[in-house]
Length: 203
Length: 126
Image 1: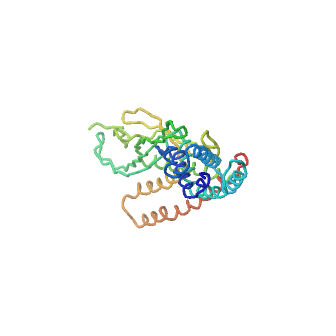
Image 2: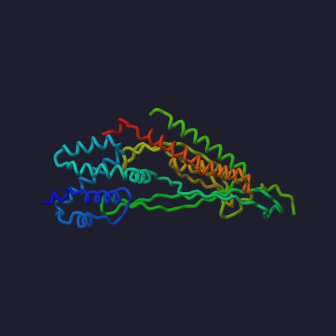
C-alpha cells in the first residue's frame, strides 16, 4: 500500500530538504512531479499531492513561528494525534530536520523580509595623498571605504509557493580624513551602546 | 600658483564620494506576512554622500547585528593603520587583539544575543 511507502525516513528527509530549498531559499525548478518521481516513485500522484501539501504546511508553520525545541515537540505531538496527521516516525524526521536546518531557514526568512538594501561587504584602504591639481604638496592620509550593498528582489513563479530571490550589488566608495574616521567611530560606539541596552532589557 | 582655500581632501574623483551625513536607527523586526515570528534587531543606516560634482545622494541600507559588529571591528583597525603607516610591534599586538581576542568575545556575545531573542514569547507561541 502506498501509505506505507510515505513513511520512509530517507525519502521524507529528502522531501523536507527540497521543500526548504523551494519555499525558503528560492531554488527554482522543484516541481511536485519531480519530487514524486525521485523520492516516492511508487506513490500515485493523487496520494502524493495531499501528502506534499501537509508536509509543506507543517514546515511553514514551524518556520513561521520560529519554534524552539519545546514548542516543536509539542506541535509535532499534536500533529501525530490529529486525524490525517503524521506518524511518530515522520515527527522524528521532521524534528531532526528542523534542528539541523533552522538557522539557515531563519536566515532566508530574515533576508526575504528585508526590503532595503543590505550590507554585503566592506573593504578599506589607506592612501597617502601627495599632490593634487590645486596643491603641489600635501601629505595627508586618506581612508577609502568601499561598501557593497545588495538589493533583494522577488518574483512569483507559476508553482504558487515559489519565490525566486535574486540579488543586485551596488558599490559605494567613500573617502574619509582622520577627523571623519573618528566621527564615524564615535557614532558606531553609540550604536553599540544602544544594542547593548536592547539586549540587556528583560523583554 | 595662486593661493587656494581648497580643503586638504580633493573630492573630485569620479569614483569616491564624500560622506556628508550619517544617520542610524536600531530597529526590531517583529513579524511579517511570510514569517510570524521574526524577532531580529537590525541597524538601519542612511548616508548622505556627495559625488565629484557636489551632488548629494541618499543611500539607505540595513545591517544585522553580526554585520554591524564586523563594521564595529573593522573600522578601529582602519583608524589604527591610518595613524601608523609603518608596521610596528604594537601592530602585531593590535592584530592579535582584534583578530583573535575580540572575535572570541563577540562569539560569546552572539550566544547571549541569540539566547535573549529565542526566549519564549507567549504572543507567538502556538
